[in-house]
Image 1 (cartoon, rainbow, N blue to C red):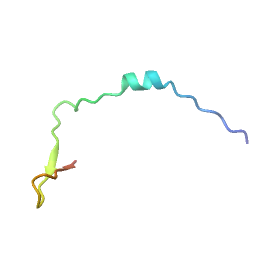
Image 2 (tube, rainbow, N blue to C red):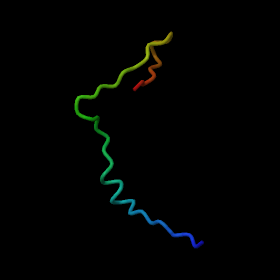
Image 3 (cartoon, helix red, strand yellow):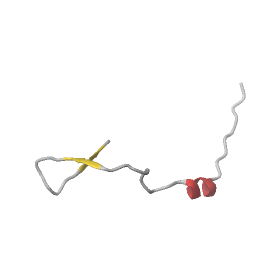
Image 4 (cartoon, rainbow, N blue to C red):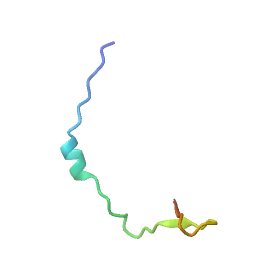
Length: 42
């Protein structure tokens, strides 16, 4: 069986990636023994 080569337009993909949070969402952190370390939790 022949393999099919998959190509990705990385410029188009990078332009569609969002780094903003979803509407109505909030990041929650687990409280631990050290105040300088925060672990995100979803």
